[in-house]
Image (tube, rainbow, N blue to C red; front, side):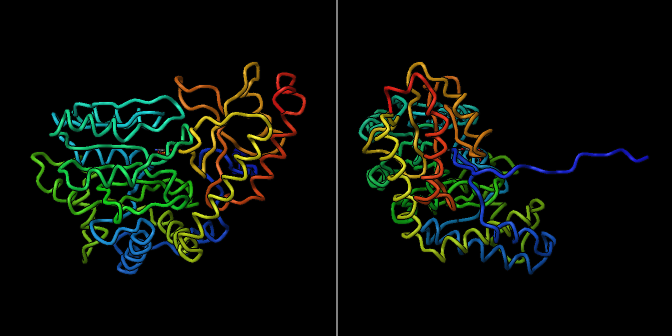
Length: 381
Ligand SMILES: Cc1ncc(COP(=O)(O)O)c(C=O)c1O
């Protein structure tokens, strides 16, 4: 008798937490298309199409644009490992989980990190970042999180980029929760290294990290005294993704690339502005409804991000229990606070396919149902 092994049978979920988000059926269908080898010239044409669509999505007419074969965190690490060498100074805006992660990885690259802090829910003021740069004019890199998923805060990135335009210091931006969901214009703003992920507003499965690298950043990499880690060496990756004939670097995740191809096609077919407007409308609707129920949002209103809404859990309420009931009773995933330092919160994400007023209303209906018999909330709602 052969052993009865478990069959794969995941339940249906509405993914309205901090990511991943649900994907369109055509994105899954793309992964069922015929497999090609990673050195097949027909695949190489597909790679060029993906890069062309990514360029338009990042709004990056020059420099290098490609999706790395790794998650958002590794896209962050790739940027730091390419742009920093041991002994360099990096100025990092830190007001949430992912700003902390940038500091941690930059230190592991051997950099001296100057962290510019703000509280959870606040954006680090650009003036404070620039003051630190005046104090450390030889700093190699300024890094900020454009969309801090741990707090729902959008950093005023274009204003910071404008201030840095005439300086030698490069600017890196974490666009993991902003690309495809809010305005991103890496070329127009002059950001030197931006990274994202596939699983949030781009609405593809997790596993790849689209990046955009400016000419100035490429020049910096070319002039390094020591090579960056092999797997993340952007100049070697360029030889596979851009140069023809393509030179082998690693076996590319072919089916993930197909999925990204379809997700980008859907995004550009909808249009970038229309896509941002859809996210803005859905996010504003959810935020208004949540506030009307008496709950407090974590982010400062002027920096509130559309795709991610962080809601403070009122005193006396077991936030994890509410989150668990949303999943168990309604099949809806929402997030909680990220990391031990985070205040108690729920995090609602309306990203990609899920960025609609209808989906927001579905989440709100479930939230109302699970909070209806919560005694500590009778005064809040
Ligand atoms: C702002 C931000 N940066 C980086 C990451 C890391 O991405 P990944 O989980 O794909 O490694 C995330 C993930 O949620 C994020 O929200």
